[in-house]
Image 1 (spheres, rainbow, N blue to C red):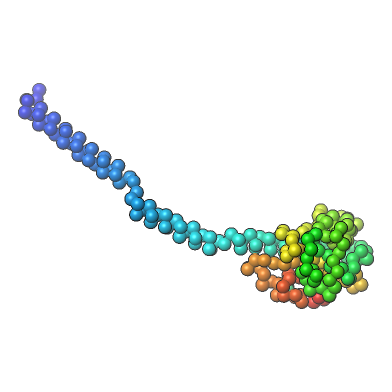
Image 2 (cartoon, rainbow, N blue to C red; image 1 turned 90 degrees about the vertical axis):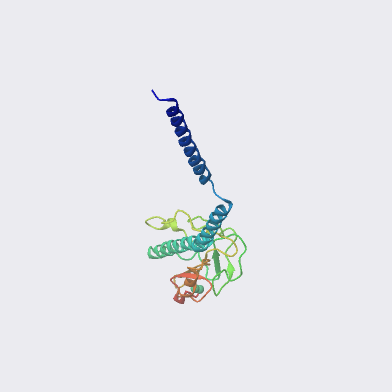
Length: 213
Ligand SMILES: [Ca+2]
Ligand SMILES: [Ca+2]
């Protein structure tokens, strides 16, 4: 049994302790929120980080690099297929030394994107056609290769418009050829000047001497 004064004292102690807990709880509740300045600082930091990521990663340049990588891969595949076609002693009479064969049906500049001595475009029926049976934009029948055509379809430029397209020229007398593409990324475009060809504005591969068809 507690005396009356003790009861009062005990009750007062409990109330005082409860008040302390309430004050601490209120203080913690208040500390959970952000002040306007803190929010502005966080938003500012996020904006700086976002800008830094965009500048460092440069998504536009990365997409250009991906398309240029595809161009390297496509032209290598075409080069190897034409080389195999010639090694297999298949006829080279379907190609003309005075035609410039292009992967796009869109009208392109007269010189075909390369630096060919001849500038007459192949027929409209061939341009943009991906068939490998001789009716495509490269008029060689790859299905006649003894081991079969390495390509299911002729590759075309990832953009394939009047600026970005593949071009091919042939020398049916000497059985040589040249393939061209227009690169667009900052990283890979310098290759257009170090590919051994005669056009600093095109990426050139092939077997023609000096890639000067
Ligand atoms: Ca070049
Ligand atoms: Ca050339």
